[in-house]
Image (cartoon, rainbow, N blue to C red; front, side):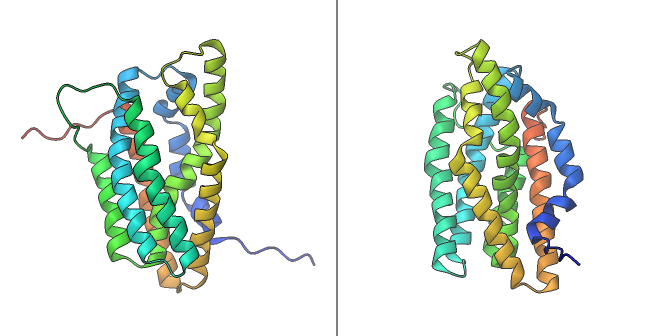
Length: 228
């Protein structure tokens, strides 16, 4: 009898979130971002909120790096933190127009997401925190391939499209490699975790995937804060 290879822990996480991922794939925001028909103000809203998100995400990754079980893992999370804080944030800032009304405020989904990630990194175990930050690596890598392919078609007909060139960076090999490495580290954490710990890791992954869905959707369909 041919042996059946063991399923990776992260494969199980991916399967558990199938319904959420299907909802992400069907988002009007992502479809219109890829085919170039997204309203420019919605794109600016997304970039603005993503910049705020990256600030919080970088803090969560830095906290995670400080709790890593070995130097190699810590170096990966620390490098990812620096990339989010400096490289990606600078790119986002360069794409935004000047706003006369000053700094923007976090949307409900953005604030909820970064608060969840920072709290997980600061108060949960290393494995749970690593599972919480994984969806941002993984879902962007997966969605990015399709978005980048669509954007290439847009650029072929309109080389000056205001944001299609930015979308093509989603499938950069270095980002794909980072997503693969993040998966490996979560799998490694799961191997040494108890059954209860793995359940908490899965729960954190699901919550973060829900926030990924909400974050993208509210860029096109904002949910204003109650008036003060």
